[in-house]
Amino acid sequence: MLSEKDSVNAALVNPEDREEYHRSLGLTKKIESRKIILVGRSRCGKTTLIRRLHNLDMSYHKTQSIEAWSDAIDTPGEYTDTPFFSRGAAITPAYDADIVCFCHDCGNDICRLPQMFSMSFAKPVIGIVTKADTDDTPTEQAELFLHNAGARHIVVTSSLTGRGIEELIDLINTIDLNDY
Ligand SMILES: Nc1nc2c(ncn2[C@@H]2O[C@H](COP(=O)(O)OP(=O)(O)O)[C@@H](O)[C@H]2O)c(=O)[nH]1
Ligand SMILES: [Mg+2]
Image (cartoon, rainbow, N blue to C red; front, top):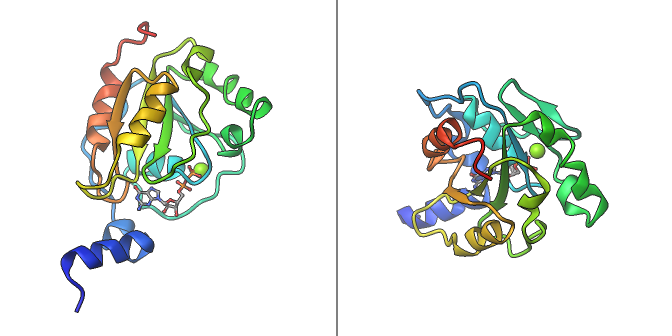
């Protein structure tokens, strides 16, 4: 029989097996009259996070191009995965956003966000640590990467469990849009 910890670990290998994956988080808060853009490497959890912010389940959907929601702009990871040129590709769509969100998933040792990338955007930048599914998931490295990329506020989240999602919505709704 699996201990509780083992079954959590098994579910992390295959999160689709978890009930939470198919359930809405039932959030009561939502983003109010502000628009965010999510930037981060492929598979770090951007699209899933946007689905969660809209109370949808976690079904997988590969982002092939920029996708616009009324309050969010999703970008393909290729925009940050490839050095130099394509990082610039994230800058132009950001003109339509009020807030830029840099995302990095825990457990990923490779950072594709340049140092002080925030300076490329005349917008406040939030750093979002993704996939912090358990309380003991190490988040320090992801926080450091986001900090080095110039994120001034950092929120630790899990789309699987809902950790930090309401805190993120509060921050998006209250952050000073002129503070960058
Ligand atoms: N364990 C876990 N998996 C996640 C989480 N968020 C996303 N994923 C998984 O990570 C993979 C990539 O997610 P996706 O949102 O497509 O990443 P994107 O390329 O940044 O848009 C998918 O298999 C998701 O189910 C999370 O909070 N926890
Ligand atoms: Mg995506």
